[in-house]
Amino acid sequence: MNMIRDSLACAALVALAAGCATVPQFSNDPGDWMVVNLKTGAVDYPVFASVTAAAEALNTDANKTDSMAFRRVEAGYYYLQGRGALNAKIGQPYYIGLFPVTARQLELMRGADADETAVPQWLVPATGISYAELRGGPDVPATAGESLGDGPIARLNARVASAGIRFDLPAEAMWEVAARAMPPQKIYRYDWEWYFADYGQVGREGIEATLSDHAWWRGNADTPDSYGRSGEPRAVGQKKCNDLGLFDLYGNVSEWCLDATARETPPAQFCDAPAREGAYRVCRGGSYASGADSCRSSARGSNIPGCGFPRVGFRLVAVPAAARPPVR
Image (cartoon, rainbow, N blue to C red; front, side, top):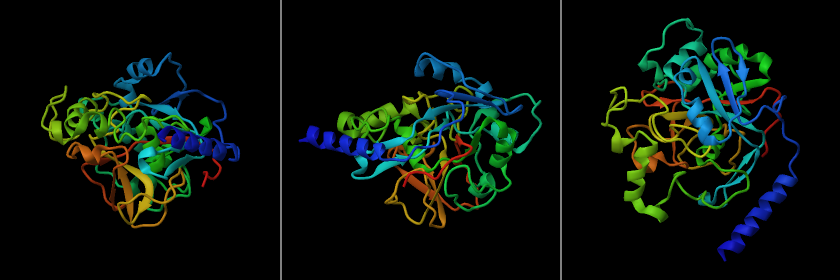
């Protein structure tokens, strides 16, 4: 029965995708990986033989300070089996940061002196910055990359204007698809609440034991990292990455997303067009102070957009500059 159900679900998704209008593409079909130099605005698209090779090559201090590394995610329909009937509809390809934006990277986005020497505390996620400050206002755009006022993200966009990309916070559907590391129209394994395992496989004790390999969370919050930090945000990239090569999706710091919300339940429509009604803004991933249940791919939190918080940071996405409206 499960095989029949899953086959029907896949067939329905293929039919939906086939009937979808052509989605916008990046102008130069750049590939799976992107590196942006925050000093010069130069954009490079390195090629790697595997995700493992890319994650090892890109997990450097340089890509946590003076540059940013990104992984491409394709447009498509993503069947979130653990969500029941809720599918994620991604109308355009996008790149998502390998790490949460660090303190050093935020300073460069703001226009700080690019010649200062990096220090260890610059490798930790930038926190204490509000949604409104990041985007130059509290309003939710129709799609990522739109309606940016003066703020760090808009200044970064001005620096890379010739590259055909625009940066923004991710819609929460974009964040969850990347966290689950799922290819379009695939359903097996992706009912897992954590990308590496699920209760049905290993039970709660197994999840909590394994989570420490992938995240800084309440279970290892007092364990010093390689820089001696404990009980606070840690330098990014010290834990295992997911199957897309992304680090620190669970724990460390929670991450701002574009969507508005008035409650903790997911929206009826789940796509790269962010929800626009509600006084709060969605945060994803949990933090170093969160329990395992709050460090799941589908777990949601929220905060008011006008305030910064010591356990909330952000991760950027890049979309085609001439983006069309997302699939609805």
